[in-house]
Image (cartoon, rainbow, N blue to C red; front, side, top):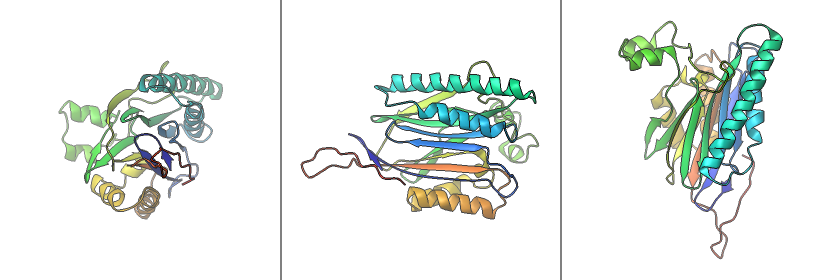
Length: 259
């Protein structure tokens, strides 16, 4: 658990190859001391998708401790751009077609947070018992829904519902969306690859995250996904905002515990 002037952050995290795949192409990163949590979901097969997601996480690991929210987003995008170039170079070397990875990231600075994403990995926020998706999928089916061309019922069984329209490593520069808001005590955030949301709906996620601490929630969501077939790799991070930790004289202190 890491504490700042405003909050302490407790993080849980878990990943699994699933019931069908032989290689886990997901990667994740939790750096509460830098205010950064990331999930990346690779595509392109062994030696490609896993390379892409690992490259994103490796580059973002070097983000350091930013001086402001603007500095943080600038550092994030600079490192994501570098990962994008490395993935493009690797794809050219392999000469086996496009490779890449979705990415979803939660950035926290003081009392503010931002979500940055490309693809269909997601961030949810659980606040006062209400689960809200913070990201909007970059997929063909979401575009059709937004245009009113299909209904939600049709979207659930759409044959190309997993076709993504954005990812890192498929364009010359990363194409991301950003949204932000203010944190509140008690907020819980869920970052996940689509291997989780393929098998768990919003009610499942809300119920589990509301009733368990972050690590127990991650473990249970992975367990339930596996019980339901886990057709893809599955990765989930849960972050909880708690009151800052203070010592006897009221001074904020940092508590660094491996979760």
